[in-house]
Length: 327
Image (cartoon, rainbow, N blue to C red; front, side, top):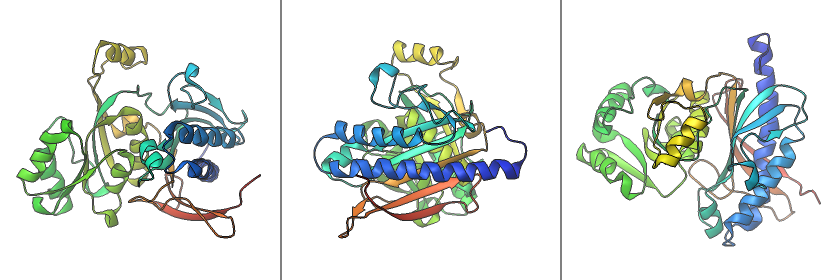
């Protein structure tokens, strides 16, 4: 999206964001029949096919930089797959057609479809491995340091927010590897909010006052880290990430993908280099951010989506829509 002026760029971002809103909505609707059916692979496949079909109708030169692996793993959206009509802006695309496939297959909450888009060459090509993450909202931007202890970060964030430590809420994935983080939160008298899986929603929650989450911290998937970072850049928040390869094979994969120092700390502006970016998500099942897909008595499908972007007039929007099923 290398365009002449800010106003022209913002018009393109707004137009493209609405196209991708439809992408997320259609992927969520396609996954809806698989809720509670115990088959997460077919659910993921349905969402992926709907995403690919809709993206190929968009006037863009799109390239998947965060997807479901390499080309030989198709039908998933694979890294370096090219999408769109071949006309229009060149963009990087990071996707997760169904974040929380296990939730969906079990009929549980917090399954969503997510897409992050930025100008070509601006999104970090994060390998599919663990990443240490630290995320906060706009009021605490510039007050985090992933190399410091969580206790030090909580003190810094509390000061930025004008809160006592006991008033902080820290969101952490419920895993044994995070026991030391949970202990630090409880030791200072702050509150923890544990979640079972899928940390994109948790990162976004730090930037929305009504959700009452001050910090997201922990180790999770690096691809999801790039998606979450894009959302937080649009929302004015902050994010730091550090890849955590678990073996030599993963370390070598970082090098192969152009990350010469896998242990470096990536700031938000290094993960998402462009301001011409946006993020969109649609709920599949109910969650803390959005309601899930519903089918009305008249056969219409009802979706609830979240949209944020640098070219969007409001900081973020919640969008409800009704859709006719195409037969």
